[in-house]
Length: 441
Picture (tube, rainbow, N blue to C red):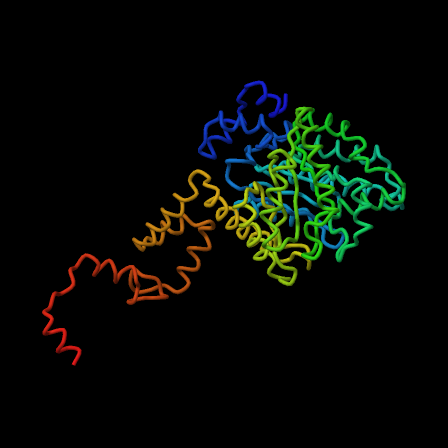
């Protein structure tokens, strides 16, 4: 039975108990959330060393880190180092998006080395298999696509991105309206090429029941991808994006009926004033399904600093109810990320996630900040480091320029905390009106 089927039947699984313990909520709260489809626990039964992670309403906002090879850079040890860095920096999940080298071997190594849930995009491998026959993706056989999906599931991945909502109707919308950046989703672009060349409906939509059967067998969570996500502010919240979202809402309902867990992927590039509306729309159309957004990026001109752009959008999205943030690294739009990019991306998104949790009232979020404030008041540097999102960086920066006193080297003897603590409890000297007048003269 899947987590969803057990939850609907009133059973609290071991995974639900572990998630509840990590989140500081009751197991019954988690069970109810899973039963309603508002919480997912990606946990493939073939991933034995997994520490379960809950994603959804009432839980901490989670952060995903993308790793993976490309045709230009392909080294399995580098990807495993990225995995270690991502987990060390606090990523809740990792997606292996490899498109170069021995993809199957890389995936198996990542799954076996990871204690956090692993996600993949199986159509990448299907496209590469088709290309190996000296054909483009348009020559892909439908069974070839589902064989790739099956291989990923059997190898133990916990969630898969599948662009099932990308239909011929949404494609028609796209062509009629036009876009500045057209389609920026790799999986979406591969499917669009196949659909246009073969003049056929998206096989993931047409054969959705087949996909559900495969996911249910191993309790793999479907991450319903947004092939029409905007790749620029100019294309945000347009008709093609909304058309796809409406279809995804129907697919979420069908997944729940089949006992399969599902979450929904979202944009992308969005101006600040459209983020909350996008979150509310997804939650309404998709009946509260966990929302998983890339960023979102709030400007198109921050190349090299898009981890900051994404963190700004991610904080607003999380505060509005988004459950899951896909990190953005400094290398976004420019190059494949290295381990340091991965670390920076995870930390930036974790800051955004926590900022959102404070607003959402997630249990323990405000208390964490209060404890940090108390440590700062006491000038307790080790406690501040311990409470930091990334303790290693906190210690490194503080020790870089040490101060002779208890205060940091920024203020030294003029530390506001020390000055106020010294004088706050001492009454101000009283003097007569006459003495005050004399001083003014």
